[in-house]
Image (cartoon, rainbow, N blue to C red; front, side):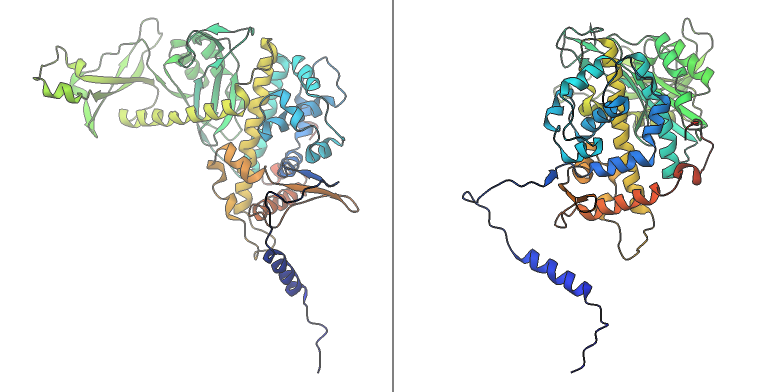
Length: 494
């Protein structure tokens, strides 16, 4: 019998071996034995992807160039302390005391090249040294990262929609800046009232700040609007600013006009006169518009309105019909001040898309915005921006993962995994299950290596994403090579 020695049997052996391993069923019951092992295991295997991602966008160089260091000297360095807090928030722990649970994690300790992280009190003391200068530098860091991510993902938005809103952070102690104000869930309690601005196209955080617990004034809104343009990517030419009635004032409208922004802001306090003859109906709703100059305004502006017929309750329908004294009593009105042209119903439809900002604010609060680490306002002000930086990192991480799913792979026979599709639309807590909370084993052969289980259905997608990040990291400046538009920010060190 003649044997062909050149025949490759590697694939056959691999497939047979894996099948044999899968056939053996595990038997786990109450009497199952248990023991420990000396191998380092981490439940946060997806952190390797974050480490590669930070290296891809040169986060450390951007940080060293823009960060205003506090006076406190730390052994890990300013970059190590900030990245440690970012990793804590990235994992899902919202309070600094939670460092207790990850001090010995193999993945995090390996990144910092330590056997264990410093105590949680070390990070708290570092946060206690932060203030307004550090908070502003975090905003500049986010602006640089935003342009790089947009370039890497091929985003060329010339027109963006900015949705702005305020929220309430209830305080349960004696923190500086706490005031009693609008707090429907905890009436009578003190709180902060931060303001946040998001880009609707990418659902990322653009600008914001922590505020004392008072309603925002018109002058403060105007200053906030004038800070928006420097943080926008270089490709953006047109901006639509959207805000609720809290942002309605001549100062805010004037600031939008000076910055060249379109705007649509909910009316609060003005009573524009609409011509009764110009109402028109669309889907059982009435629409109208007029040019009106409220008292104290310098120039007249356009106001658009929607009127909704009031529905009668079943008990009221059984009663004899009684005509309302005034026609307006039969309708509920929604009135907006805007610079948009066209039909009123189209302008109001643009405002209604702003409703998604409530979901973004709620997600930000769940990711750590409600955690108040200090009684000092300046510390909380800086921690606010760190939380939002971690929130944006998750947004960018998901965007890059989905982009990797659409990119061409070196081996067309190995398609991307289904788990990466539609990842940008998932909440962070869902993406955390898909890309972060994956068991990993750190082993040492000739060098340290991270191993994942083939039995986990999420591993093919994760491996595809990690390979994509490695290919991107192999390029010198990947955000410059495929430059689509001139960047607004440039660093001398990069």
